[in-house]
Image 1 (cartoon, one colour):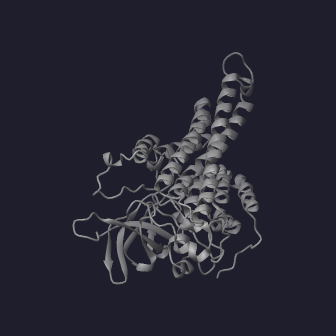
Image 2: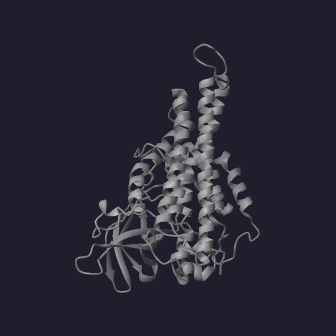
Image 3: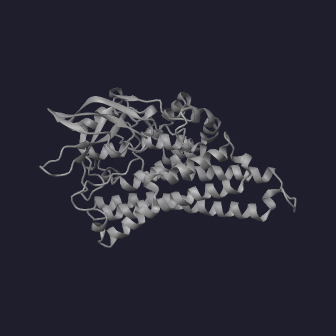
Length: 419
């Protein structure tokens, strides 16, 4: 057992702590983007606030709150800086995954000795894992490992030898301590790799012939149709640790963009209150119908995106509770529907940012401006393979209608979505 730092802390207090950090996060946006991730000073505040403990079991030093609390907290952090929100979210969102799928002894080691735990999970395989006595050996490189700068552990996926001759390679997920990997300084605006999300800590890391014991590995079947009872549910007794990760994984990508939309609304309002129109009628822009229209549409889109996001989190927890009672509420079809619903939320939030940016002046989105940063960050979400609505809609419909064989032959490896 690991003591909880503040046993009486409530979800509302946790969310309020995130809200209070918005000014500090906005002040550090430029330096975080240049560095590639938030500062040590911000990290200390995050640790003090306990943000990474939200989904962590109380047995192992966490607050064991629910997914709605986590999502609402991280939206506030992302309103301060979407890239920082992305980094913190993807470094902190996997505590309930570890607590669901790994045995008690492993959980005791990774969360211990004081419960300070952060663990990103770049899902795309880093390479091949080789079977050896007592576990696996793996070498390779994981790209887009969002959250790795302040990680204590990392999840990584690898191709595993097939169980039968002629079968395709399988996938294994490996839990690796931070000391066994090397983070590369290949992120941030200094490196100039990406259009946006430069403060998201999405650095690569390298594994060089790392040994991973069997107990720290899992078949990567978390997105498949599988029995729902997990070691974590039996250990902790909380339906949260029945974890079906597809919905929560995409929610962790959407919530920074909802935060970006909230922040963009504030920037645009300030702009139109301070500047007059360029052409007659010469009036304050907030009194001009075209600017009012953009602000009104973006507000509606942001409200709708946030409502969908929070609605998913509530639905997810309710479905887990029913599943714990024996109802068949969780499966791949439900995963697909939640994922698609969350894509709509992400699209609405990104669309709100785009609407405001397109209506702004060019100087308002210049390099170093907040609105310009939010615009670029939203564009990176749009480009993410997990957010491609048209691709997913067609495949989902085929799945719902029993026509999935058109898309994927039965003998091909299951596609894996990187994060």
